[in-house]
Amino acid sequence: MSLNLHAKRAFARFYLPEITSTIVLTIGLSSCAVTANPGRLSANPVPISFDQPFNEIEPEVILIRQAIIGQESGANFRAINPHSGALGYAQIMPENLPRWSKEALGYVVSKRDFLARPDLQIAIVDFKLNQYWQRSIVASNGNVAIAIQRVASWWYSGKPEKYTNTATQYYNGHRYPSIASYSKSVLRRYQAIWDSQNAIQPGEMQRDRGV
Image 1 (cartoon, rainbow, N blue to C red):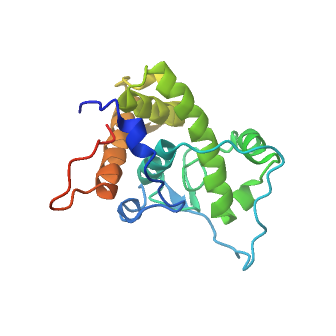
Image 2 (image 1 turned 60 degrees about the horizontal axis):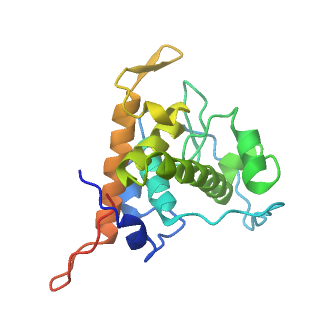
Image 3 (image 1 turned 30 degrees about the vertical axis):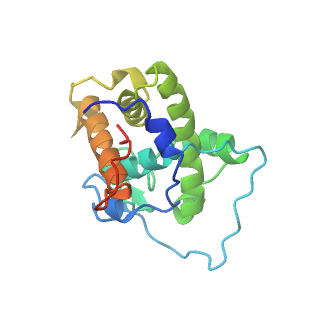
């Protein structure tokens, strides 16, 4: 898959909705996640409050998030991994939640509140992915495809430079895909979402592709 160096300019022309696109929602729940006890959701949830400035989210980050959640939970906000305890929509590790929520929102979010609040999940996930994207696009010298795989590897393993690692991964004795396989899968999902959002209509000129 070749890189189009004009991709970032093309991305600036649109901004995907905050909730996952239909293409990702139809992927289905990952076999490695189960649903938490739903409990009761507030009919009028308290709006997110930010005690510190929230960085503007890059358009690429929205697509990466949608690709990752298709890989992780199939857009199930209450998913819990039975092996690692990873939480929610994008399967955040429970030990990361206090620090990440503090960074993103200015206060610590409990596991219970996190699972009950899709808006909190999206805000925290987008904040971290935005950090990863900004660093990865620099590290990849502007190569969008490599940057996406670095972000995916970072999310999956905590090590962005491992995106080509083909070793099978294990967690508590359970087998998981290699980092390279995961990263490539996220890249394919990203491209599928991009293509669906930028389908060429009869008579239209070809526009820049995502990667």
